Structure formats: C-alpha cells, structure tokens
Image (cartoon, one colour):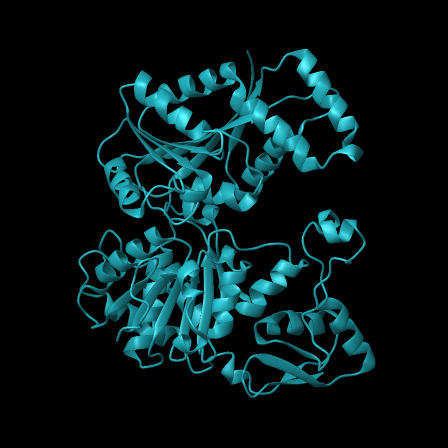
Length: 509
C-alpha cells in the first residue's frame, strides 16, 4: 500500500492498494461512536452509529497515520508513505534536546539541577516526543508538570526559530491566568516574549505577541484569517477535543507545523469513533504518564479511597424503584436515574450524614457536587458554614474567575478550610496543593471526571502524606442493583485500573 501527503498537508492519500487492502482500510476507518446503541437516531433506525474517516478519494486525516500504519502491520500489508519527514522530525536527536533543556534551566533557582523542582527526566522525554512527532496526543496525569512540558516545547520552538506564533487552547479563564504566571516563572527572564490572553471581554484584535492563550469559547468566534500566522497549537485538557468548538478552531488553523493535545484523561477505547477524532485533529499517542507512575516515584501524593456505600431508603420506596426498573421499556434510563438523583438530594437523613462526615474531617477538604438546579451544593455550603468553625467557600459555574482565584489562594493558607464546588468547575486544571480530602457527595459515572477530580488532590505539599477520597454511594438495591449503585461499582473499577487502593464501608441508617 502506498500513500502520500496531499499538497495542503491535511490528508494522507492512498493512491495504490489492492482491493483486499482497500476493503480492510475502509472497514477499519468506519468505526462506531461509543455507546452507539443508545443514540436516539440509532434507536429510530435512522443511523447505524458509524462515522467514516476515509473519503471517496481514499484520503484519511493525516493525524490518523498511526492507525493506518498499525492496521497494515496487523494484516501483513506492506506500507509506504511519501513525505514522512513532514510528519516526523528525523533531525531531532534526544541527547541534543536534553542538553538544550538542561542548559536552558541550568541557572534557574527552582528548576535548575539540584533544585527542589529540577526538571524531571520524563518531562524532557515527553516534550521531546511531542516535538519529534509534530502531531500528537499525550496522556499526562495531574501533578506531572503538564504546563512545564508545554513551556519547554514553546521555549525550544521560539529559541530555535521553528515557530513564530504559538497558541494554547484552554477550557476556562482560570487556566489562562495560571498558564501566564507559570510561563513567566519557568522563563526566569531568559526569553523575550509576550502573551496575549483571549477570553470574554478581551480585545478581539491580535497583538504583536509570540504566544496566545485563549478559551475555546472565545477563540471559536474568531474569523478564519485570524489564525493565518499561527503555526503551533497546543490543546490543553484535550479530552474536550470532541467538542465542536475545539474542532472548529483547529480546522481554521491552516498553517500549523506542530499541533498536540495534553490531558490527564485522554485515552479511550481504540475502536470507537471518538478515538479516531482525537487522532484526526491532533495525532497519535506518544506519551503516557500515569498517576501510578507519579505516585510510585514520589512525584505525587498517594491516594486512598473510602467508598461509603449507604443504605437508608425505606423498603416501600425501594420496591417502587424496582417496579420502575422492571418497566424500563416504558421509560428512558435517564428518567429513572433522575428519579434516584432527586431522592438523594431531597433526603434529609442522607444530607445530615454527609455534612457531619465532612465536618469531622481534619485538614483542607474539597467537597464536590453536581446539582445546581435544586441548590444541593449551596445547602452543603450553608450547613458547613453555619455549623462548623471551618472557613467554607463556594464555587459553581456562575462564580467569577477573580473570586475563584481568591478562594483558591485562601485554600492554600492554613488548614481547616472547605471548598464546596461543582464537578464542572473543579474537575480540571485547578491547582490547590493543600487539599487532603475530597468528598464525592453525588454520583458521577464519567471515568474522566472522576480521575480528573482525584487529580485535584494529588499535588505534593510539605507535610501532606496522602489525599483521601470519600466516595458516597447510594444503594437503593432491591432484587437487583439501582443505577446509582451501578455508578459506584464503575467508579470502583476506575480505582482498580488506576491502581488506587480502596476500601468499601457498608453503612445503614
């Protein structure tokens, strides 16, 4: 099988292949979306759940070259690609790159050789892999120094005149402020560069700068021409890449030489369409720095999970819920789940058990909730503020970035503080080193959200031995398991796969 890059560099064109080879590639590059059976259009038999990543001209997105190469290897097809040097930098030698990084940070008071935060070997290797493979995805767990890796890449590209304008796409304004501060800290006045933040309320015009850091919500509104001189792009928290706005931004960047995505929770099933989408827009996976690796090497705080499986509903209500589950052909699963969630936030005994548990915790705690509509998070906040001597703060999507930053700073000052926050605002990108306890007060099924949430407590701090996760599970089982109990079991599977030790405590009240 022979292929070549198209003139615009956006596709690999398969121009020579046998019928057998082509049939297999067309089959491989037409995967189904995850959980396709539950999609409304599939249920109505209007769609088979597949998405094709190969067009009628036998072209595939260039970022999927690794999938193409591996498919050929798996089935014994010969594979040749012209112009591969445009995809991989064969001239970049690791030893030379490592020497450059060590020299750049040699006199840094924090990150130089022998300093407390000396640049780590895996950080250099990760940055090297991203530069070597000009398009890539990397799963890099929280506390691994993701922003430092991003800066090393930026500094190398700018110093060696391999890029003129570097853009970082982030999901929220807090990450812009954090990245700006971190870049200045890492740079230590070595490079002369300007950073332009792009978010709601900032100037729409592009300034004379080397680095743009913007939210995808704001960047997506820019015209296509606005991106013409951007030749390097980083998608931070790249598990958002399936969002239409992120895909639109990347599609507008017609002159990218380097593009890559970083996230602590990026890897997914290789057979689903979402995996192909990640590679189509960013490229193949080149780094995998796991939470277990960081903990084992003492780069992150250890994690212990207490699963508090609570049984508190009356038998009559359990029986009614079981009846509804037996009639699930009459209801959507989401409707039954919503009923269970409403029972949780309305149950006073359950509420008092949870807040009393939180009130007895020592050191700083993060209390995560999902319900905003009915004010469950606010109720937790109000009770803790009125009934404990702790400093208690509240954050949800409506809290301004400035207030959030103030709360985060205050959480770092001393102990006996509690931050009540919605999963959406605190699951990604926030650094609070002093968190010793994380309470999951409502059920969340998403493996990504749970892993990101745990990551908030993994950052090292002097005197901090570990982070304890308290996972409240609502067991309404009667004959078979209820939805929230099943969610709890899935979270336990996440703890197992991530190597987080956990213990289940059965509680009835």
